[in-house]
Length: 557
Image 1 (cartoon, rainbow, N blue to C red):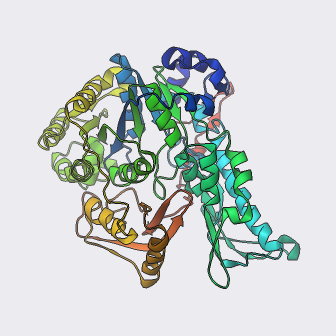
Image 2 (tube, rainbow, N blue to C red):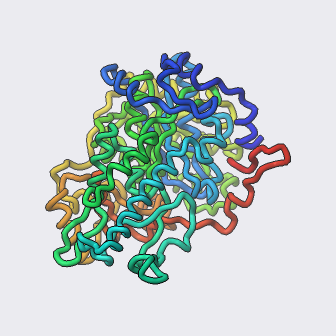
Image 3 (cartoon, one colour):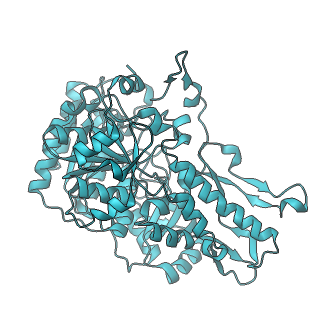
């Protein structure tokens, strides 16, 4: 059966009943969106703030490949397995965006027998959070052009407006546009463009905010452009935009409660773009889950070099979160791909390529242990084409690193297939104390922070940038040097070249542009050809998504 068919055949528990039974949350604290999803009240979240925290488990992965590694599926499977073993566990995930859903992925709610449900709702509109972010972002865009239209009292430089527009679909033709054409009644013509919603700083702000008051302050701090004469910064608060934007985001700040196929409670909330932001679910959802469960399993976007590094250096730094352990997801297919095998040949046994590909997994594991001080468990996400010899070779290679490893079959078997993984994680947390530390100190300059990430995590020899970019970083350091750095690069490689597989060393990291995400509280360094508005593939998933004769959605995965 397809993922959607499996999800549709699974009986769900009413979300108010599940919340009361599994979490002790009364119905009065929930606003249901139908029978199987609900938003949790902020007042209830405040009421549990003094409870002790559970253990936080971070799920990350080796560098992604076109074959897919199943990180979300593993997150769900591990959460289900922990509950199966009698522990009180929750899952925290990002919300899927419509762009990838109709583009490459066709859905992002797990797979097989390890899914969060209702699957079609989560993938399509859900509780409207993405639309709220788009509306708040585009309201600020409209206010900027309205300000310019009415005499531009702040003297905004039309050439230095940093705030673009957003939409929740992949549409490459809108990356760069000209607005204001058609005469004086339509404003002043200028260059503009669209990003995908999850690339909006509003999304990053929403996912780091601790309260409505904090959200409002962060929105006001967002940099939108500079003045024409002296180049002074202009913020969203300069246009008095933060109040109305907060109103639009009021409900979106509340975490969304759903369930897995095995009725493990799950918060699916927020979804910053993992390339150009911190790429994980909202801080408010993770913090709340830790008050409600003994174990919370959460996921960071893409491989450990992007997702885990940003989770640890940005989200944990700003929220006080501290993981007890990290699970690194690997697959035989991904290891062979990083060993030089093309996508069409990944089902063929190739022990030589497997050994070469281990370099990629080995670096991710060593980064998390050596640079961040985290206990690590490796999960081999099993696929049907994996041979016994391949599985044995991977297990032996991981064990040689002194790291526990389990073969996980949750996609096919649900929680039963992840029991071994769950036991290993529990044992690791109990016996190997976390010595979590950040990669760099707050007091380090922004350039040195960037260089530290590049050399220690990516294996680079140096960071290169032209004089203009270096001057911009120096300027940001003078005023916001305490900010962490968010590197925007391809997810497919330790380098900025998506075709450079394995674990390259000695390469350079070219930084072409830097931007200050002042509201979110970090500097973004754009490396290589990093796009903030993806395009659709030659055969997009939208072509197979449809409604059948009975009115049921088909084609999601």
